[in-house]
Image 1 (cartoon, one colour):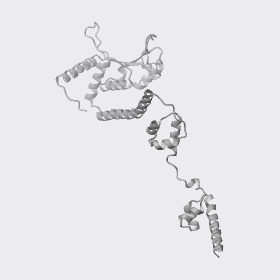
Image 2 (tube, helix red, strand yellow; image 1 turned 30 degrees about the vertical axis):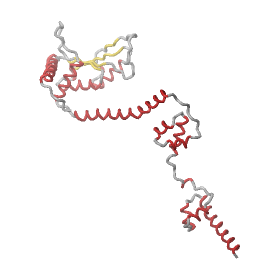
Image 3 (cartoon, one colour; image 1 turned 90 degrees about the vertical axis):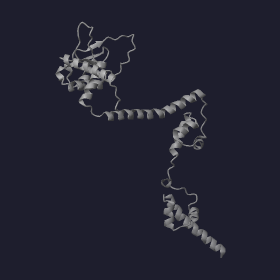
Image 4 (cartoon, helix red, strand yellow; image 1 turned 120 degrees about the horizontal axis):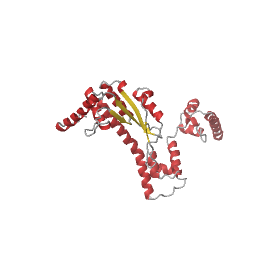
Length: 294
């Protein structure tokens, strides 16, 4: 009777295993099979599914698969464990396990290792420094806000005295008129706005391009004409600078547009006012020094 009972038990188990294996191969999870067969004991369920791999969809993705693949790529490129650890942020023990079948990279001398380490630090440091630089500039711009008429006038006076044509008392011919030259588009925009704030009509402004003869003069004139809001036909004949092959001229890139010269007709009184204001600024700053408010 005992042998008959054991045979019956084995038959029942094999039948139940068949019922478990078939849905497993069809892609069902352990929980789905357990609920379908009403098998609540994990040991029995393990025996029923012994040797049957889980379907791919039930496998949990390994978060380190991408790191392992990347670590192997870097090792093939000759990276050391230290460099891979810094790059990927994982432990050396994991890296060693992932790449142990790969050949060891050739040992670099200390000088080269130091260069690589310094380069790696700069790759992380430069974006941080650039972020700080841009934030400092943005914060300063926010502090300025919209200038008052007086502030605009004083800023224009200082800019002109730095970049504009000045009168010379010892010169036989006085040059008391506004003439300004610059290559920075923002400076030109500001100067034109400064003139407008002083009541100078656009019709009193004259423009001329000064540029190297090897550059694109037509394209440069079109750029400046659009910037100041006039037609290119309003420009005087451009001044072309002769190219000296002995000089190491660097402004040859496509963005080079020369300098824009701005004349103001009938500006003798305006020039005298501007010059007097400049000396007033100097006198006031030296006699009555004040702290910068920003």
